[in-house]
Image (cartoon, rainbow, N blue to C red; front, side):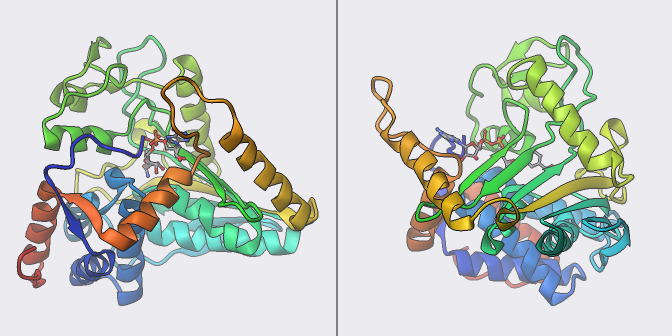
Length: 357
Ligand SMILES: NC(=O)c1ccc[n+]([C@@H]2O[C@H](COP(=O)([O-])OP(=O)(O)OC[C@H]3O[C@@H](n4cnc5c(N)ncnc54)[C@H](O)[C@@H]3O)[C@@H](O)[C@H]2O)c1
């Protein structure tokens, strides 16, 4: 779910002001201005979409990685292989958002030429929410897919040892008059960052999200943070996570599972990997007919009979689009702790924080 419990500890923040502050922090870490802006924009966009677990909450970890010798703030992605519709990119130990944006852009270029384009990225780091990369394809009349590996937080079904990441996949499909369909899901019942949000707010976790380190169910966020995330759909979810991780790692030569990087251990350089796919609709089907049929799918969901007490049915990506509309108008609701941590990270890098932050 993109929604979090309780708003009593939240304050509304203007997206533009937030982006400017975060970009200044990343620039102060040594990033080039355009890269700092891109990274800041990607995090603020996640907050704008209600994905606060992958928004500016991440700034202190990213600063730590960039200043402790983990991520190279000036790392530059480059093409190192591939053929035809395929590119292999080395991120040069840049933030995943820098390498991921570069790699998805190349996949889109190749798709324009070949109908499909794929990019595998290595030498990468944490890349934030995956919807951003999948959605890059939409403006080109393409379907986008993006996957990443993630630090292992799940056990194989029935196990009690963290060896599989929750490895998300996002898929974005253009519609005609309706908003695009954007599914962005990890294969854990929750994301690690989301447990951190509950921990920060002192709320118990919903049932079915986590196990303790022996594989016993828990709703205590502190226990869950050192325990295991429960896969969605039992063995099916952990199986999907494995294949998303293998796609993200084995094609590019990036690390898989336990070999992966760690956002917390600042000095460890990125060995993470991602996979991107762009599919040009026009190579398969008349884009107008595709759009009209996608609209019909969306409208079918909206019209479908609802279970008792349910007010509205959503298509994937719709809630996030609604959040963006509301948050651009009213400001982004951010947790006070997130704002305090952001201000501390800014001051530590010598960046002025606006009065009353
Ligand atoms: N970079 C990384 O290492 C990494 C690792 C894990 C997760 N993530 C990111 O974490 C984020 C959260 O992932 P998650 O699995 O917790 O997401 P989630 O469980 O919140 O599910 C989100 C998806 O489900 C859809 N959805 C939610 N409620 C719906 C409803 N009632 N009806 C229809 N559709 C609905 C949303 O539109 C969205 O597409 C994602 O952006 C993911 O990419 C990143």
